[in-house]
Every structure is written in C-alpha cells, then in structure tokens.
Length: 238
Image (cartoon, rainbow, N blue to C red; front, side, top):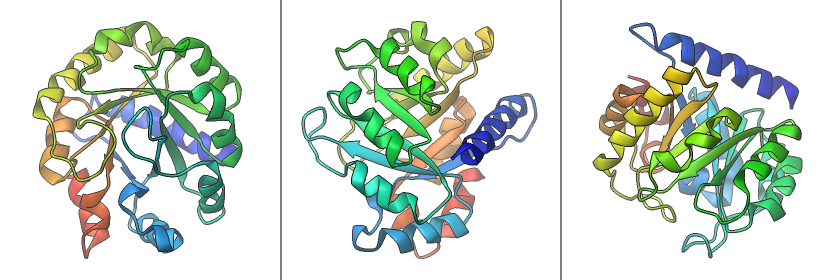
C-alpha cells in the first residue's frame, strides 16, 4: 500500500513541476464503470498493460445520484488483482459512514462530494490521518468558490463535466472555465493539489481539459469500448 501512495506522490510532484514546461505528465484513470463487470480482472489487466496510471472506481448509492454501482467488497476483490493506484470516487450521501470500509478494501485516494451536508473538513482530515489521499468533487452546478477553503486539505479536486450518475454522457464545455479558475487559485497559493476531470473525456475533450489546467483524466467508454485500449490511452495523453 505505501509503495503505491509513494509513487503517486512522486507523480503528483512531477505533474506540478511540469506545468512550467512545454510538455507535462498527464495521468490517465480509466473508470471501471464502463468495464465488463463479468470479467473485471481481465479488463483491469488490459488497461494496466496499456499504460494507464490509476484505476478510477465510481461508487454510487442510488440516493446521492440516481444509480447504484459497487461497494467495498468489490474493491477488496479487485485490489488482489493489481497494484494500480485506486482512485475511489464516493458519490454517496453519507461518506463518513463508509469511507473507512473503502480504505480497508484498498483505496489509495478517497474522493467525497462538496454537495453533502456533513462536515467535509472533518471527513477529509480523517481520511488523510488514515494514510489515504483525500479529494473532493464538485458537480456541474457547484462553483469552485464552494471548495476554496478546503484546498489546503486536499490532494485532488475532481471537476465533473457531466451530471454524475451514468457513463456515456456528453462533455459539458461550460465546465472548462472551472478548471481554469481552479488552476489559477492552486498555482497562486502553491497548494499541493491535483486537478482531475471526469465526464465525456475523449481525445478532443482531453486536450481542452489539459489546456485549461487539468492533470488527471478519467475516461470510461472511450477507453473500454474500443478495440485498441493502448491507442485510446495514448491519444488522451497527446
């Protein structure tokens, strides 16, 4: 577990430094929401061999978003199949009740939502104290200003470029301004925080997000529903 987290710390540092360079390291996090759940092991092995950096795990409770996906037992099972960095996105109403289960199951990064009513700072601090990385996500209608005070606590901000709940949705271009706004705030204050984007990511929209300041790209359909996974991942980096 420590080795995976140490690796991502180094990668994150490299990503931040590379913003000063012409080329920068972009991390690709395929979402298993679009994988074959009858054979997750094979699909995870495929993206790992194809050069993916992280594995993005979408957890939905049917309440916070209108869909139900997987729980900690599935994460625990797939943890045995790979050493990839697990980026676990909790789209759930009560993350304070369940995040520890996902940490024990093998999550390296745990992302909660800004829109929950609970004490987000307390949850984020607890996640970090457990040894995991902590992140927060904002829905399309949530402004960046809602999370500015939390940035010192964060390892990552996930900007949703679709309404969360289902894969395969069209990219919302009006969310690009959020990436740009957040990039300026992070750089100005030298926060140790990555920007991740999820929703409708393909070769074209990936370029838009990276140009706006994103460093981590989540993609599901574009990667898993293609005959050439390696080429799809390479095109996102390009």
